[in-house]
Length: 355
Image (cartoon, rainbow, N blue to C red; front, side, top):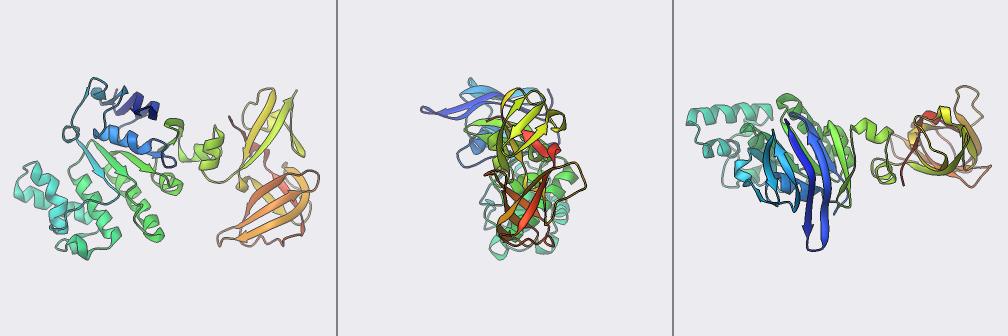
């Protein structure tokens, strides 16, 4: 099978299962992020892919060749992979150009080819004008570009990135997300990116593997993860949401203070107890009762508000139940705390999840 394949991968440290029964197929040229909180197993998984840690169970394959299994592992230097670390790990005694060309020199390429390919890569990362500078003379973002250029110039089979933006400030992190995405779109190197930052994963990835307690809870596109989370953990870790409990009886699901015909929900719901996720963007606040649309309409009042610049965050208190909802609204949609309001919920965005 082409691409990078993890089959029932597991790693135990003593009695602790850091990674358990992980299955993942990353297609050639695909960018997949391993996303989750600290201790979820994402870095251990990445280090097993790199060859720094051996698995206790399962296997890692690249284009049909077994790289690791419990019987043995191919050394990191023979895997044809490049890795970018949190600390960048660029040589302080080498210039930018020398750092970028270092991997090519190790591969004993002719001097003129090393210079040519390093120069071309510096053009790609927009660092040609800084080729003769040393790392101490560069900003954090510039050092990260050097690390990217050095990793990509050798044309690896797989590019591994271990939280590479964690040492940058917020503005630089946002800039570098798009830089990583731009470079991947240009070179289409199979890439595995570890992060706990959902925004980084959403911007850069073709697919995201959400990890929790050593397992993969859901692997999907960023859009599908946000709009169709399958578990409570995924729904709460990817963005913000409202959880509502209800019960399906016949063709109706009764939630706290409102009911929805089963046919209006985006997915099948089995009879009995139901837990659903409703994103703040799936609701709309208005000062008077809305008469257009086919949404669920609830009377109530504004309990809390917070202005975040790009959006308002409101907490809506329903008057016919004790239900509260977090609601996102555009900047011009201003509601005073304590004022009466109506909440309209789009039933097509009420997503049933597993507990």
